[in-house]
Image (cartoon, rainbow over all chains, first blue to last red):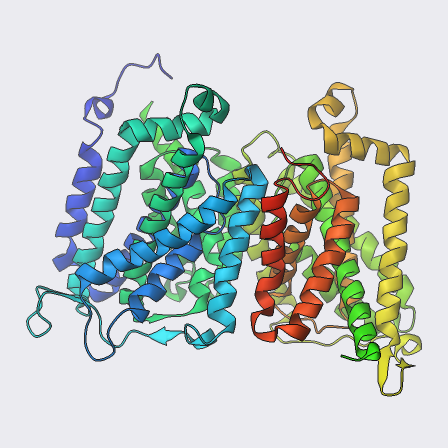
Length: 327
Length: 290
C-alpha cells in the first residue's frame, strides 16, 4: 500500500479532519432536535471514556478490564462532593472527579503493573470489582439504589450562571468541548517524547528499559492519566443522567468500552471516536421498533450477529475500512 | 460457631469450589492451549442449567443418564461453535476474539430469552437424591449437595486421567506449555483445538446441569460464574488444571466463610484474594514469579 500514489486526502494535514469534525459537533447543536441532541450527547460521553482507554490499550498496550471503576468513581465523586443545598461549581467538581479517579488509578496501577498480559487484565478487573462491591454492598454511596444529583453543577454565580449543567444545550456544548479538549490533549501527548516512549513500551518494553527508560513509571503515568480522563467522562455522565448507581462500575461497562475501541480500530484516536459513534448508533438503530418492527425487541441478538460479522470481515476495525478505501 | 455449623459451611465451601473447578478447568484449557479469552464460557454454564431444566422432565429419575446426554449435546455444540466462529480467528489479535465471544454472549442470552423466556425456574432433584441427612442434633445436610460434590470429584479424577495418562492428554499438556512447538511437531492442531473447545464447553455445561437443582435457573446466571471462574483460572495459573483445583477450593472457602463472617463486605473477598496472590506471584500459584 505504501507504493500507492498519495490521494488528495493524504495531502491534507492530519489535524484538519478532526478539527473540522469538532467544529461541526459544536456548531450542529442549534440544528438538532432534543432527541438527536441526547443521542449525540451519549456518543460524546462514550467517546471521552473510550479515548481514555485508548491511551492505555492502543497507545501503551496496557489492556485494562477495570476501566469502569475510574468512570464510576468520577461519577460518584461528582454527586457526593456536590453541596446538598445548591449547585456545585464545575470548576471544582470536574477536577475533583478527575482527581478522585486518578488517585484510585494510582493505587491500582502501583499494584497491578507488577503483572503482565492476561494477569494484568484480571488484576485490573479485580480492583474494579472491589470498588463495585464497596458501592454495591455498603451504605457508603447509597447502596444499590445509588444517589441522585439534586443540583446540576454550574459555572460562576449560582443565580446567574455562565454555564448551567442542568440546561441540555449548555451541557451539550460543555461535553463537546470536553471531548475536543481530550482529543487534542491525547493527540499532543502521543506526539510528545512521553507518547513516543509509551508506544515504544507497547512494542518492546525490554528494549525501552535497556535504552534507559523507567518503563514502570511511564506506564503508571499513562495509567493515572487514563484513569483521570475516565473520571472526566464519569463527571459528564453523572451530570447528564442526574443519578449515579453501582452499575456504572460493573465489569459490563469495562467490557463495553473495550469493545468500542476494538470495534473502531486500536491504535488510533479516531478509532475510539468512530467506535463510540458506531456503537451508540448501532444499538439505537437495532432497538428502534419503527425501523425493525418486532425484531427491535431482540436487539441483543441482532447486535451480537452484527458484531460477529464485523469481526469476521474487518480485522482492523472500522478504521481499517477507511484506510482501505483510501489506498 | 459450633462444630456442626462449621462442618456444614466447610461442606458448602468444598461443593462450591468443586463446581467452580469444573467450569474453570475448561476455561483454563481453552485459555492455555488455544489462547482464546472466552467470555462466552459463562453462557455454556447457563446453557447447561437450562438444558437440565428442559431435559429433566424427559428423563425422570434417570438423572445420571440425563447428565451424560446433556454433556454429549454440549460437546457437540462446542465442536460446531469452534468450527463456525473460532477456527478462523487464531491468527488474529486476542482482542478480536474477545469481541467475538462477547457477541456470542449477547446471542446466547437473547436466544435463551426467545426459547425459554425470562422467568426464574427451579429444577427438581430426582427422588433418590431428594432427602437430607442429619448432622449433629439440629443441622441437616441435603443429599443432593453431597451427590454434587461426589460427581465433581469423579469428573475431576476422570479429567486427571485423561490429561495425565492418555495420548490426547499428552498433546493437551504439550499444547498448554508450548503451542508453537506442538504445531511444529506435526500434531493436528486444528483437531486438538476442536476437541479441547468441545471438552471445555461440555465441562461448563455439566457444571451448570449439576448446579441447576441447587440454585434456580435464571437469566444472566452465566455472568457471575464467568468472572469468578476467571478469578480461579488466574489464581491457579493459566493452563494449569491442578492450579485451577487448588484455586477453586481456595475461592470456595474464602467466599463461603466471607459470607458468614463479613456479610457486608463478602463480595470483595475473592477479588482481594486474587489481588494479593497476583501481587505476591504475578503468574498465579503454579508458576514462580517472572
